[in-house]
Amino acid sequence: MVTSVYLSLGSNLGDRAKNLRRAVEALSALPDTRVAAQSSIHETAPWGVTEQPSFLNLAAEIETAFGPLELLNAVKAVEVRLGRTPGPHWGPRVVDIDLVLWQDLVMETEALTLPHPRFRERAFVLLPLREIAPDVVDPVTGRTVAELAAAL
Image (cartoon, rainbow, N blue to C red; front, side, top):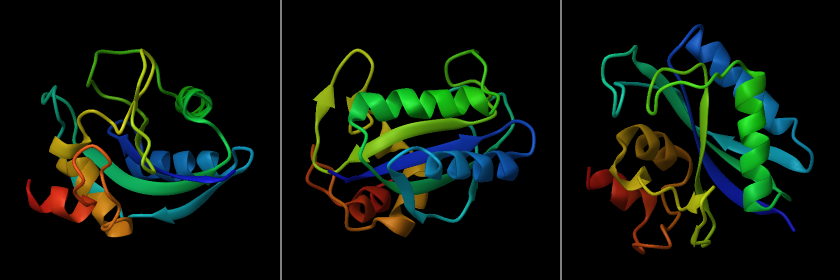
């Protein structure tokens, strides 16, 4: 079964735009996965730890046969393959890929929480996501992505 999943991608080290392009290419190369939509690139201020370079961010919709934890593991492997190394929480990174929304799935495990627990307060997630999925509903609040973005 193929599922639509919405991701947030960001980069603030090196050639940020190239890092994002490479990440989208790597996602589309995953087995039984295709990138169905991609937003434009947005330049945003860092969130959490503000003393670091600004980010380039985009949102992507993928269609995949992976389950949630399988996709999380695949995405983390893509990050490492593209040069992400361990660092401070919310610190600078070559690439960051977060699972944001997985249709109407609500889950919380030690490894993964869906929807992403902080996406509703992050313009760098919601503004790109609104470009490709304005009518997608957050299963926790019942509000659309466009409504969540307008409330920021």
